[in-house]
Length: 394
Image (cartoon, rainbow, N blue to C red; front, side, top):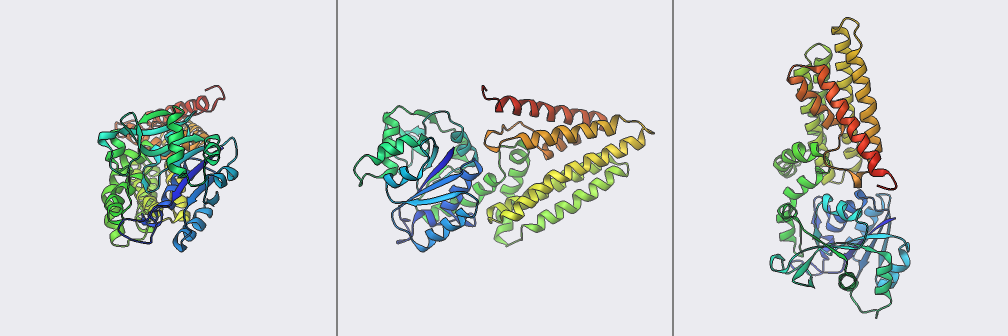
């Protein structure tokens, strides 16, 4: 069982009386954003260590609970230990931490206690030093038993710092932070101005979900450029999605009418528009709209494949190669997508837009049938990899 441990104790440096955890970040507050990362990584239980319950924090905890996870606010390590299942694996995020889904996912699947670290000389003052000329970069994976050890210590011991020290003393593995993580904006901030400075560009990149290469290589750059501009002008999330959906449907019609190359390009452009709309919805915490647009990003490529299969069947005067390959792609890609467990996703694995990209690329080279075959093989390779990853002895 995966649980999350968050902290809401420190006050913002430039807003006396307000907790860092409740500073605005990406349309929500920082602790909601942190909880969102944990839930996406598979956490079913989130514990928040609090010094005092402010109205803003109470509101944030209520909104986190609406995400379908158990949420508990605790004041001491003993309370935290009582709430945690004794066999839980816990991902702990530092108070004021800004990070990416990729980082949290990495620690969600760690088999043993681990700390994200960086050299002390490269660490900002907000990073806690753990000895050995290393500093903690704000993410840890620990067992619930370690929280129980902290609970046995005097009550006035700080939960975050003490847990960190015990993990380091127990020789938890140290995972060096990748330079790309720092480039993406990973850090700890306790001032609203610094938080806002990091904010929108990193959020656009994070919301694109780079566990999926289509999102990371195609949607993320578009979102990084367009999302801040659209948010500044209060453009509704449905606008880019609506434009993308319209272009995609027009492309699907073009495919069945006999222009597969240009039609597939239009469908792919439609998926990009839907992806940008989903990023805006995620940033604004419009969960229903984000889910709808994610579903549309799966449906639109499937519709294009169906149309292509029909077009090839007609063009071949009753031939079955195109329709059979289209059916195989739909079946294999659908199985792979349903089998993927989000925290275990590998970047190269397929997704409906990724399969569409392969199909479009090969079709532009002159062979729609070869495009269907290539996309089907890609989906089949993903399905095999997913099954191997989920095997108990893997």
